[in-house]
Length: 369
Image 1 (cartoon, rainbow, N blue to C red):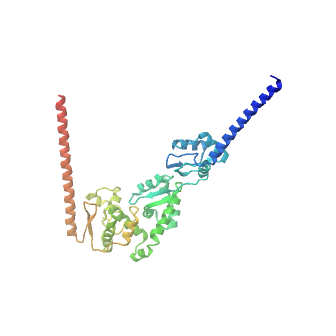
Image 2: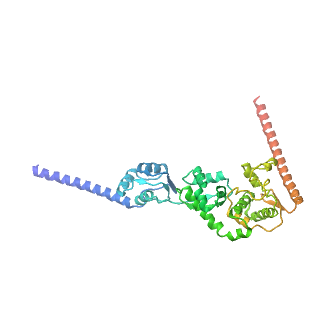
């Protein structure tokens, strides 16, 4: 073979190899460009929430995605991050429910475009339980919220004292950002309370001659006392009757609050020396004993008009109301008799179960001998 022919063949082979290489590079470029512009490069396992507690880099993000079960190509993710220029990702709560492309994914995390959450605040919670419940749903800790609730600058702005703030945390679901600070969240809650309670019912409170905090204090007692919303106005009417006649309120929930737990009360509990024990003090306690719902606040504002002065819990969780003490004692005995009968039935069942287990042990022991 001549040298010229050999060189021609070599050149042809090099040309083919170069063309193949160029095509490969072009295919990779087109493929990656297509995936870079596509909308399914990253696939979450269903609805997935990414919580980023502080600004992180790409390596930490990849670890977090692995932990949550995302489907993605790590090498391609790094390439896309370099091309798009996103390498730091902000703290926040990010929800992914469908496949997403690199531009949208990186932009969302790098710019901190969070998804809000529904903060659920239950009614009738103790102070500590309420703070824990809120903190579990947010980025901050319960002690951070407790500190913010004592901040005089915030309290002075709304003209309230720390022990009254509790009654203004209206139970509901609120759309908030996970990274909201305790102060910002409290401002939101207090503004919401003003808009839904203080402003619309200011005239009614003036008519009753009671402040907003006196109303929330009474509402908090109703909240603990009533199991059913439709019974709240009747309970409110009874308490208003006692207040108007200058009787002691004698509300069991205030004794539970003074005792520090919600449990069945015994005679000694009613003698607890505590400023919230309405069996010992006259009028309303110094502040709310829980965070009342809007239905309890409305019941405190619009009590049922009746002459009841006494009530006793009934077996179905409702209350039996009475106008006279004699009638109240009769209904109380009915309730006591029912409780005594329930205890008798329970004790009898426990004795029967103990005898059955003893007989079973005797039979087993007899078989082994």
